[in-house]
Picture (cartoon, rainbow, N blue to C red):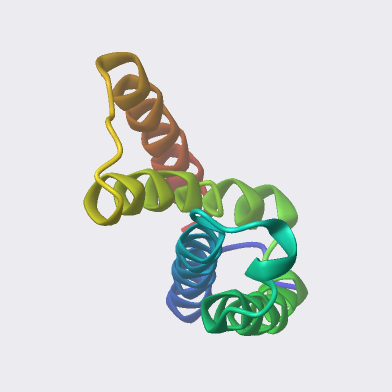
Length: 117
């Protein structure tokens, strides 16, 4: 395991963030206006599961090379990406308090990322 974050590993972490965001969007869309059992028959549910599996493999590769104290906080970017996706795709509202929280998460991730590089 390396003691710092390399650019390829940062790229893989960002891929994990993207895969997690896509997974959540797929699950949200599939679950909209559907009973739980009906959701299992929707292609978007299964696409979300595929992204979940891909993320698992990528995340395992990250954990083999990057300290958990650096990798895991960077995954918090998925919270930011999911909030943005919810606002853009589903027209969900983001109030000032919510936006401030997202900004603080982003600032924390930037601090962790800067210490890992």
